[in-house]
Image (tube, rainbow, N blue to C red; front, side, top):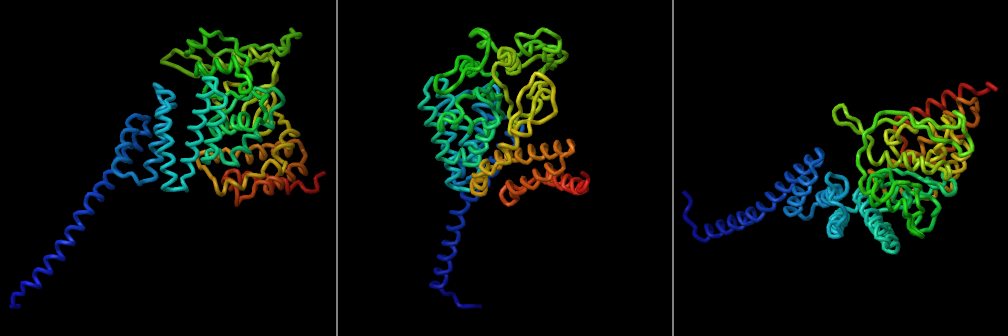
Amino acid sequence: MCPHNPKKERSVNSCVAVILTGVLLLVPTAYAEAGADSLKQQAVEAYKTGRYPAAVSLMQQAVAENSDDAETHFRLGWYLHYLSYDSRPLSGFSLETSDQILFHLDRALELDPGLGNARYFIGAEYGVRAREALRTGDIEKAEAEFRAGRSKGGFPDWMIEYGRNVLKACKQDAILFTGGDAETNPIEYLQLVEGYRCDVTVVPMALLDVPWFARLLRDGLEHAVVPAPISWSDAQLVSMRPYKWQACTLQIPRGSGESSARAMMSWYVEPDLSTGKKTFLSAGRALLIDIIETNAWLRPVYFSVGIPEPRLAGLKPHLQLCGLAYELLPVETAEPDTKRIEDVLLDPESYQDLADLKEHDMPRASRILLNYHSVLLQLVVWHAKSGNSDKARDVLDRMAELLPGDVLPIPEPMRKMADGLRATLKGTDGEH
């Protein structure tokens, strides 16, 4: 048996105490991280099922448990944004909540500068703030909000360029219906901040059912919003709601001086809402109909290619592809406006800022850039079907040159389509 050594025993005991102290200090942190991860996962599940208030509450708890997790701050800012503007009932704009949203998104980027989607939501939030300023008639405030969003990376160069290319498709004094934030915000930025194409009335499809925005569109705002042709009264705008509707064909005159049946545009409009056997027309679709009827072809009307087809309300047969937008025509057509497409999308000047995508990608928004490929491939198909194989091959070659894969990778289905077209066109060599 070893002899008892009190000095050595005290030394060993001291070491054990130090180790145990260290372990005990680590335990709360480990439990906190585990708790934060669990709360975050619960919040994600709540978000997936549309339970935005629960998602926000759980993510707030996760931030309280671990304030240094970039993804938690990002998702809290994201979910707060959805809770405020995209859920039912809408809580609407609140400066305090908006500031809170931006705080968490800014914090997420501070912790992880590579979170490109955080910048997307920063841009989306500043777009809301700018439109809120327009609601009150404060144009300077709206411009300042857009500038702030741009300075924080919410509207990168490639996105602004895309918005400019959408506007290039539009004729003078156009009415342009747009899709989501990635299309609408850069276009409104260009108009308010850079004064570019201020002749165009921009109509975000997602806001057509918002009474105050519909009134702003109808009345316009000098130096900021060109009025849209809307016939509804204040009372009708305030009482916007779903309207009873059965699928039917609307007949819209194609010109004031024409009276024959051929002078009418036939537009088959189906209900977009239903409850049991009852069908309805949403407020937004009803206002869309009113704008087109009231306009009576006085101004050219366009729909951006980023708008999902179900939201086009049956107008697709009357839409002519002319670049990153479709022009509404009184007759049905499948023929694209090849000259206008080529003037913009085969011009190297239209892609000066495309390489910015490498440094400032936003996966949630940058997919809109694939519309460049989509439109040009449709142009190739049209030229090929029209028997102009040389032109079709030229467009394919120019597309590969203007949209290099190391900058904007082409999705596999589109790549296969391009390869198939190239192989088919190669087989037509000499067939003149």
